[in-house]
Length: 364
Image 1: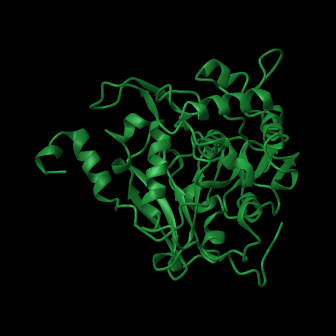
Image 2: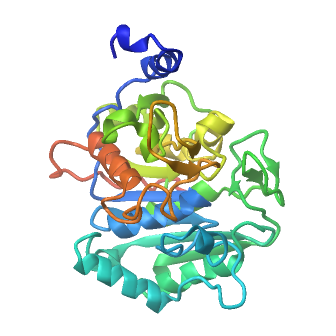
């Protein structure tokens, strides 16, 4: 960006933001056995990404989410059927979801659903979650049981938990029953990222704590190269984050994508989710690069943009605010995250990452 393009106040702010971010590093990470997870809208996004890109995704974790394409492009359905279902306003059945997936695959808009056969999934619902009710998670579990072997699915119900990522890594986490910012709770020693990563790709080595520069670093990277046009017009922030273990700078590693929830992006809570959700310690000791893409709030038009977009809580798009293709490979956010994964990937996929060593490993 040139000096002259930074003359206006808005552009000055944009220049300051982008100048502090570096390009996403080109590593030798594997892009054929990606795992994904998320909380709330991030859980919906994780499931959405797994289904659309089943050719590269091998596992998904969902905390307080729901079935693929649950909202069907409707905010009304999102708020009712897919968050607080009642009466006839229910989440889709497993058969309905499977029918949708088959139709989209036949149209070439998502990867073939047969790729899901070797996936593993980890699900969590909280008994005190009043935002995404347990019947929604039950519907997601029913879909996976119609798709995967029973031993590939772990569905955990924590009766006292509110709507949050359950972490032992954030020293200021909320009490277990809470459903409030930053949506990171402490429920005794329940470590959701540790449990989901162990189920998806474990058994794993114990996490590195405390983290030091010798074990890895969290980088701030520019998200704009991964979007056609402006990042904000895809509902994305200018900056994203990635935790890169030191060993992954020169060796083959796995990739895990962690999707934050609504009101949980860096613009709302800083790096609380990136540093405190609990992924990074496990990543450091098990050769996993963790990608933390970031959304941004939108209240209609944005500075310098004529595109109307309403996303006041900075959620991932699981109901269509970026466009009708949001749930497919053509969705703006979907394409952006896919491109980030490719950048982290190695030039040749001939070499696959060695499994984490199991000596002294932890398995949940």
